[in-house]
Length: 352
Image (cartoon, rainbow, N blue to C red; front, side, top):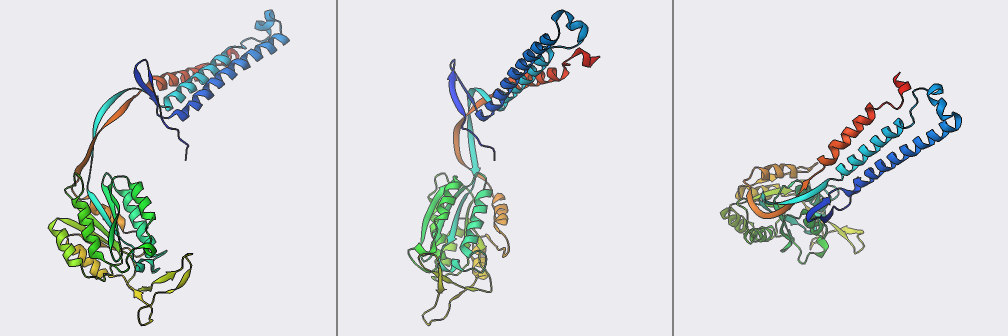
């Protein structure tokens, strides 16, 4: 990837001017050096010619040889390259204010961070697959606001609604089932909190969505109440299943992250966790949403297609300052100089 520099902004004669890509000034410097080298080469050539042939015999012994034409050609190339470098640096002069409006919907992601999400029936684990799904969603959103609710036995807001997707990704990396304050899985509490985040949003959108990333195991039974509230508020739940129907034991790790054993129940039997496809489908259907599942791939692409079909609302309006581009003042003369340089024949002898 090409390195970049921050744009240069300054005031000249009362005008706001700047360079959007100052890195390309290096190309302008190369053009200047090329012109100087052409001039030095021409002077050296004239000196060598004068040392071999007397000035009065040059026209007779070296007809058509031009000392200055190569210098002029090199100068044209150098000056043209310099102007092209200035054009690529995107010179700007003058500003104008514009009102920009951002349209989209509000999306709250409810992410399951219970111990069952450590199961490895999908690689590398259910939680890592859920992170991949959420990162895919954030990469595909266009102008929408996204928030993150994390839940296990209880739910809490990990990230409020924001259009800064990089901040949501930062909060996502901090999710860890081992530090959840309460064990178990409470899907209903997560859905209620997601609705609260949407209801408290400033200038909320007309269309609102909750994206549920979970294996679907619910141990508290608050789902019906939560889905009824979401349905009344016209909030769809788009559920993405993470896990497998066959099931998998839940691994237990020590503080160093090394595997110790599989989770046991009160009778000492290994706990097997399975994807509750039917439960997630019921949640989605109860709110007018849909269930998505891709055992060997990423299902979030289908979720994004569903979101793109929803009606967008104006979420934010702001006044932005745009700089007037002036690169044409350098690009057109630079092209003309390069064409002249190609048309100029360095020697009359070569023309003959």
